[in-house]
Length: 203
Ligand SMILES: C[S@@+](CC[C@H](N)C(=O)[O-])C[C@H]1O[C@@H](n2cnc3c(N)ncnc32)[C@H](O)[C@@H]1O
Image 1: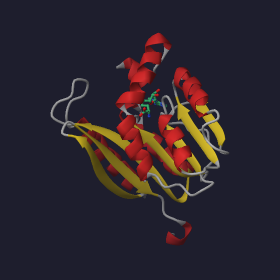
Image 2: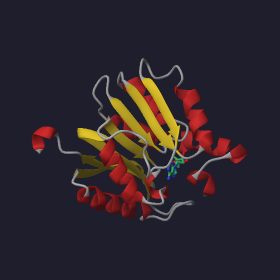
Image 3: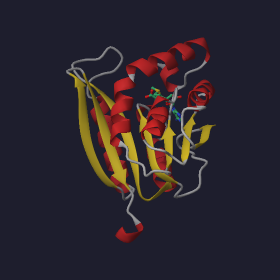
Image 4: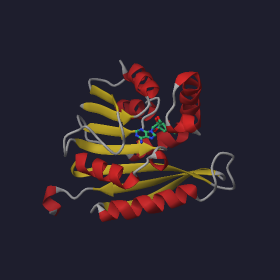
């Protein structure tokens, strides 16, 4: 479990490789749900090996691909993956904490996280930080794994509970929140919790 929280060393390399396979459908479903404008700036928290950012940069020509992960190993691996696989976008992947984002306010069109929210020590603070760095009209998207019918590594219901907590915090932050689910199999689904920051015209 510690390796999922902060992959490091030889086991971390294996964990990064496993994440790629285990989380592939969830990463794909998340990227399909994201719609940054061409030339836009995107931020991922807890990007791990960087597959979702790579998929997103291949889907839309972006201006900036940025991210924060607190694992040195994952930052190195994601930088390697994104080098040469992000079109003309600038790359800014940093070592850091979800609850302390080193980016200016209103910088990003989209801020998202896949399968990472449940690991953050202070999720309310991290969501507030994400909302702060979003442009007005921008989207905060949390992609949460929902194990059903009993999982080996995760109790059923944990994903639903995480999503419920996220919805409440995002509403408290003034975001317009919607939730939907994508069912991958009888035992596994992805919950997508999206919060839209009011645009300037919305007041
Ligand atoms: C289970 S992995 C998911 C990786 C990737 N998003 C995916 O779906 O394949 C969780 C990632 O979140 C990162 N992470 C966990 N807690 C974090 C925190 N508090 N701040 C920044 N990154 C964090 C871990 O280092 C790891 O790379």
